[in-house]
Amino acid sequence: MKAKSKSKKLKMPTEFSLEPKGLVIAYIGAGKGKTTAAMGMAVRAAGDGKNVYILQFVKAKAATSDKRQVGEWPVSSEINFFNQARIPSSLGSIENEQVGLGFVGILGDQKEKDTHIRQAILGLERAREIITSGKYDLVILDEIISALEVGLIEERDILDLIKLKSPLQHLVLTGHNHYPKILKACDLVTEMKMIRHPYYKGILAQQGIDY
Image (cartoon, rainbow, N blue to C red):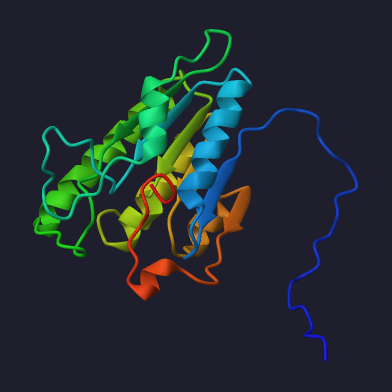
């Protein structure tokens, strides 16, 4: 017997606007692919001549020595690529910054919660500067919803950032959980659904694939 779909049928619009519009986009869910999708969008936007800024919450900066502090994770490999690639001047730029201090309360994190909170607040201040600078067509706030999930920031902090963006500026948010007020403020929401994940077999993230 064929299972019935519970998805709600969307009503197609009768008219479409040709005017450009800055979108608020959220990639959420327990499945892999949220940051990957956001980084792919960064490349696409730069290919169209748009300037991009990636601000990563929770994720830590590159190590300054052979050893990292316990609980931190390495910078994702796509960041290494963006930092070393020679992007032609005819294309847009991709800049990035990590404002997190790594994992919060898991996988060996030994930092005080207040230390993570202070860093996240600095990240919010930096996000405000970037969004309102007028320099960037696409701003990606990677893991900002994750920072909310672990209690580093509040829901209203993200809603306030959304209100700051200009009409033609695109803003991307990533994280795991549903926050109705945030999702209502978004124009596009995609949920990455986990079917199977190697983590639950005791397999940690693979470099070059997961980060």
